[in-house]
Length: 464
Ligand SMILES: *[C@@H]1O[C@H](CO)[C@@H](O)[C@H](O)[C@H]1NC(C)=O
Ligand SMILES: *[C@@H]1O[C@H](CO)[C@@H](O)[C@H](O)[C@H]1NC(C)=O
Ligand SMILES: *[C@@H]1O[C@H](CO)[C@@H](O)[C@H](O)[C@H]1NC(C)=O
Ligand SMILES: *[C@H]1O[C@H](CO)[C@@H](O)[C@H](O)[C@@H]1NC(C)=O
Image (cartoon, rainbow, N blue to C red; front, top):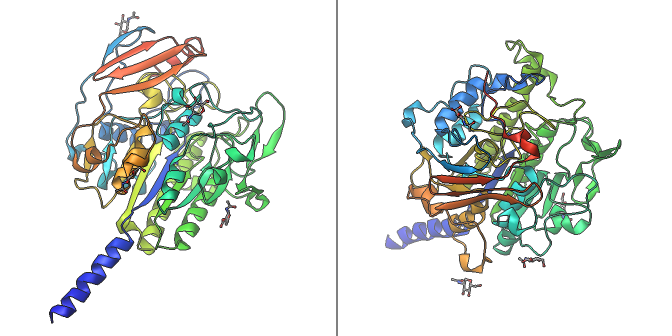
C-alpha cells in the first residue's frame, strides 16, 4: 500500500524535476505605439486605429505624466507618483477598433509592468536585453547599426542565450537581430542561439524581405535560416513566417530540455519608406469599419501580431509546455512619431519619441505571464530596466546567479512574482556622447541634459 503511494510520489517528483527549469519565451514588438496618433501636419493618422485600445492599455498601465513639467532641456524633474486605477478598471479588453484578445489575456492574467524601461532605440535596447548591461558599458549607446556599417555588439560579451545554453536550454532566435552582421561571428547562431530564422537588419519589407541600405540606392534581400539565405520566404508575410517558425520549433521541441525562444517581430515597425504599412488583404478586410485606409492596414498589422501571440501560446499549451513557461511580451522602445520610419504614434501623455531620453521613448509596453508567478493578475509599478531580464530569468529558473559576470541588471523576480518593492532605486536612461545628452532617474527624480537631433525628438506630440 505505502509502496504504491511512494511510487506515485516518486513519479510526480521525477516529472517535476525533469521539467524544473522553465521555458522562457520572449516576444518583442518593434516600435509598438502606446497612444493616439499625433495631429502633427504631414503625418499620416495611421495609428489612430490603435487609440481606443491603447488608451485603455495606457490606463491599465497607469502611465503618468512623468515628464509633464520637463519642458526645459536641462532641468530636474519631479516624477509624479503613479496613481493606479483599480484592477477592475483595467481595459485590456474591448478596443473599439482593434481587438487584441491574446495580448490582453497574457497581460491581464500575468503582471503588467508599469515602470518598465527600455532604451530609446532597437539596437541599444536589444543589446541591454541580451547582456544585462547598459549600452554605455557596451559601446552601443549611440543610434542603431545601419546597413552598411561595420560594427556590432562586442564579441567578448556573453549573451543571455549563451548563459542559458550552459544551463541546458535549447535556444532559438526568430525575427529581427540588428546587433551586427559584418562578420559572421556577430550573427545569432554564433552568439548562443541554436537556430535563427529571420533578418539581420533593423527592418524589411513585410513581403519582399528587402531593406534599403542607408547612404546608398541599394536594396538587399535579408531573410536567413542560420547563415543561409532563405529565398523560399519571398512573398510571404513576415509576421506569419515568424509565427509559423515559432510554432514549428515548439511542436518539434524535445521537452526534456527547457526552451529559450526569442521571437523578435518586425511588427508593427514600418517597412521600407516607399511602402511603410503592410498587411495581408484578408486581414485588412476585417477592419472595413475603419474609414482611413492607412489606419485599416495598421489595425491589420497589430491584429496579426496579436494572433501570433495566440498561436505561440496555443502551441505551448498543446505541447504541455505552458505549465512551466514564462512568457514576456514587450516593445523595444516607444513609437517614432515623426521623421525616419515614422509610424505616426504619439507616446502622449509622455513626452518625446523613439531616440530621445524622454519617457515616451523608453517607458514601454511590457507584461509577463507565468504559472510560476505567485501573485498574478497585478499591475506592478516597480522600477525596472530591460537589462534586468537576464538576472531575473536566471532567478526565476533557479539558476546559479554567482556564475553571472558583473552587470547593470538587477534580479526583479521576487518583485514580479510576489509584489515586493523593486530592488532598483535608480536607472540610467542613457549617456549619448555623440548627441551629447544623458538622463538618470533616482527615485522619483529625473535628471536630463542635452538634446537629440537639435530637439527634433523632444516634441510633445499630443493625441488627436
Ligand atoms: C513648460 O510648460 C508649462 C505647461 O505647458 C508652461 O506653463 C511653462 O511655461 C513651460 N515652461 C517653459 C520654460 O517653457
Ligand atoms: C570587452 O572589451 C572591451 C574593450 O577592450 C572592454 O572595455 C570590456 O570591458 C570587455 N568586456 C568584457 C565583458 O570583458
Ligand atoms: C555557483 O557558481 C559558482 C561560480 O561558478 C560556483 O563557485 C558555485 O559552486 C556554484 N554553486 C552551486 C550551488 O552550484
Ligand atoms: C540551424 O538550423 C538547423 C535547423 O534549421 C539547426 O538544427 C542547426 O543546428 C543549425 N544551427 C547551426 C549553428 O548551424
